[in-house]
Image (cartoon, rainbow, N blue to C red; front, side, top):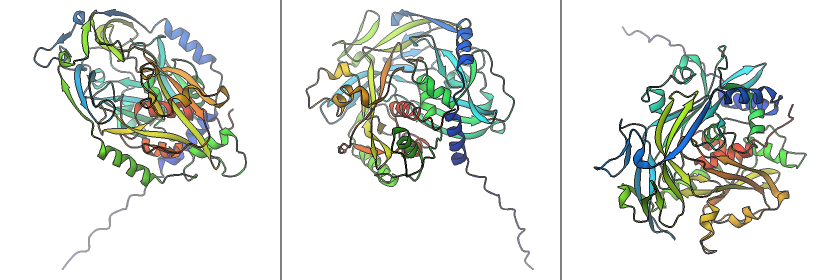
Length: 478
């Protein structure tokens, strides 16, 4: 005699977190209280948190050595990162080249802890001093740590608030995705970009401050204040504009519509994914590591590795003394750009919905060959030597934009843990309609947000620009 199987309780699906979170983040974006408390926190923190960085020759970095077997610069622990040579072969104007590159084969955590305070979502921000920062303190995520850091390889103090990102019982996940770092300076480097919410009481320790999204958006317009890691994670959070599809045709309304899923899209997302996949498939870029002394156009001079023509960047050594960090002193190599970069979004309104002109761009250090990049991503000083046919598309349009067409224009730093005094001008320019070259597509911000839920679709510069453009969303600010 057979027995009927026991009836199992069917789990009840939880309400979709992301759409609800998008509305809550929009409310936080509309909330811009006085920044007096933040400004006082900055002044107080400057007394307790700072770094003093001294440039030193690469061969005088304590704990680092030139590995005779590999030809790389490595740490004596075998951890942290190494500086290696990279040989790149591709099709196009530059058929082949070599360059130094940072190899850091571990996944760090860039994470925001968020919490409702007075019914509004607030972000726990860290005032962090990095050795490469030009201006000392910058706003970083709650946790910004490499795996070597948070597992204690450096022998320093524990990372504050790390438990909320490692203990699933203490938080609710809003976003959790691995994203690439700079594909021309890092070899397949990824970081876990996280946003988690807690309902526990959480006190802001010294050097930390609670801010609304509206306050962070306001501070993004300040030169070199909101760091690269913060901008990367901000691009991964859900944000819905909630704008009507009829009525006002001003810039703010067009931006809000662009943030709202279901608004007009020139290209269905399935077609966008196919376009990216096609670009990755047809790419002929090949890269492999080589000893640093095998790089024909690079040489050690004055204690640093430099391009023989004085272009691009240098690999330098620094000695750091830090107050208020997990470790008090250390040495390391860093990347120092010869000139400021430019990253620019060209935007236009299509039937009242803002669209961004994105390019698909292959870079030798990316995990999956190519990712979406800003309309323009380059170092203008390097491009000045190129013929008109070799210059990046739309560079002249961005650089020569009328003041009336510029929606955002701020110089922001690259990641201060690996880049020394290096930054890029972040520029948003509104234009009329422009035809799409083969490697470019007009996309909405809602489409870009959808792509940030998955790894390796928007490069670091695109995520940084996305955070800047979305900072212009205020709704009915209060």
